[in-house]
Length: 282
Image 1 (cartoon, rainbow, N blue to C red):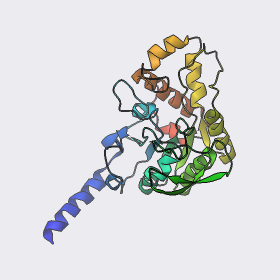
Image 2: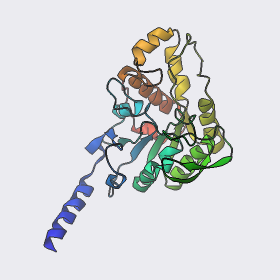
Image 3: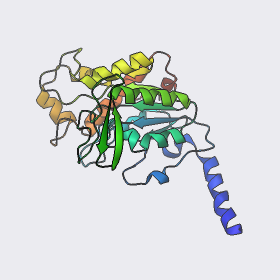
Image 4: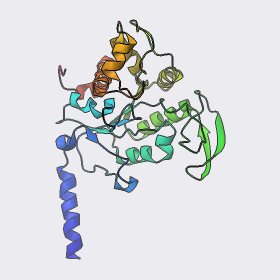
């Protein structure tokens, strides 16, 4: 009995000692750990900013990086903890159906925040044998019943808008402040002019969801595109992307998108998250 009490005592002390600065910009590498290994931060007095998304938000590949991997440096680590829970290959649908969102909800507390960027992987097939990650294109309540060959069970697939509404509603129900981000832009194919936005359904859908749900919204696509203004596609590609494709960013591209996120937070009206930013961080 005594042997059991000591580990429990030590775990309790460790939980009590958790502070925001214990792991600022924490990277929850969920691809390498099990769902059961997810740690809920009990007995904490500081808020957590959760970041959820796809590989444009978290990318451990060599030479590539996501904006969620570096955005934490803009926040005061003595006041808030930043955790990047984004996972490569996930869509608004599969981040939920694979259980990752449930773990965020289980760990969060009232007063926490969550940045949500989805859309890059929602346009794929609904039920292919490779990824089966697509959502129905649109904002409504349309559904399609499929057999998911990867999960080996029947599944009702919803629209991108439906899934995004669930994130907002469930975050609020748990006392979190949800902030929707439009997907970062792909590398442009033509010169970018001031005011340009990528012609993408998911950029438009994300904005519409935020407006309909009266949720905070960062038009990340538009902000980053404004930083591309006046640049030729070749220059943008060489500076902010990699030779692999026109979607995943280099460390410089991740830094630019993180800067755009912070710019968006500062421009939001009545957003308490802005109060946790470091002053004049470059």
